[in-house]
Amino acid sequence: DHAALILKKYGTKEIILLESTGRDGVGLISWAGFTKHKFHNLYDKLSIRYLDHERSDNFLETLDKFIKFALKKKYKFNLNKLFRKKAKKNEDDLTNEKRTYFCSELIGAAYKQ
Image (cartoon, rainbow, N blue to C red; front, side):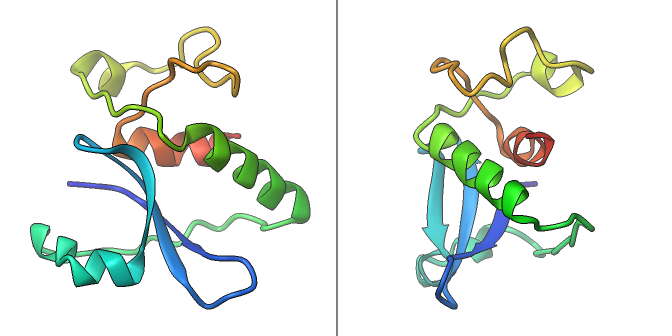
């Protein structure tokens, strides 16, 4: 399984994915690139879940700030991170340069901001 955040690039019709992968860590890939490289074939099915969340200017600015922080962060997955109920101290601080993300953790953190 994998999770990514689907975004529409501001002022365009371009669709991009924010994701964290074991190979590259956190990054952005266009939907065109995702399909061109046949990454969609890695999965039996693709599902889209719409979250009912107000997309206010404040939300979009906060999301933009989070994306800029998270880009290039390393991927890290382990069972402790998966089953932990609370974030560790300073883990959600946007100044923590050692922060790592696995795919669904990245998406949760984006909405938590």
